[in-house]
Length: 164
Image 1: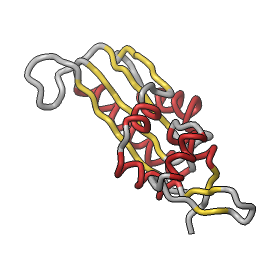
Image 2: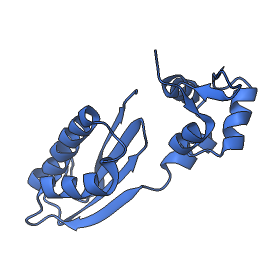
Image 3: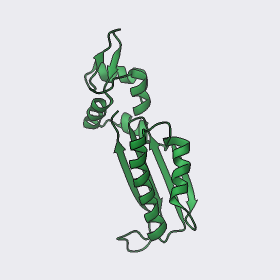
Image 4: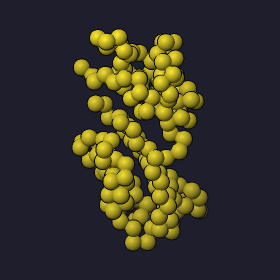
């Protein structure tokens, strides 16, 4: 059985106010149950699936518009493990479980390592968005890219969802 959370938890996860969560629940956009005390409780996975189906701009823009963590870094002598350590300490450590941190850390360091080893760029911008059940990050450089003809902005992105 999935862990049920309250309105405030859903709001923080998806960048919505409690009144927006109530409105989405009242109109049947997102499913909910009632606790023994009569409070609305939500399964985050079911809410995510419902919101993905409707994909309203208020949800997409609200949660993912500005990164929770962003750095512009010089690629010379950059070590992906040290960048991951900073990101994890600043943002990931308290938000994701051990298994999720391991998966996200592996994907992150592989992507950043690709930019370091293959982009031939001078700088990279690393952005991350982390919620209680989901993590996203982007590695953006102005290097050549694997299939590029000439120089333009290239990026890699990763998203993973973790259900409680």
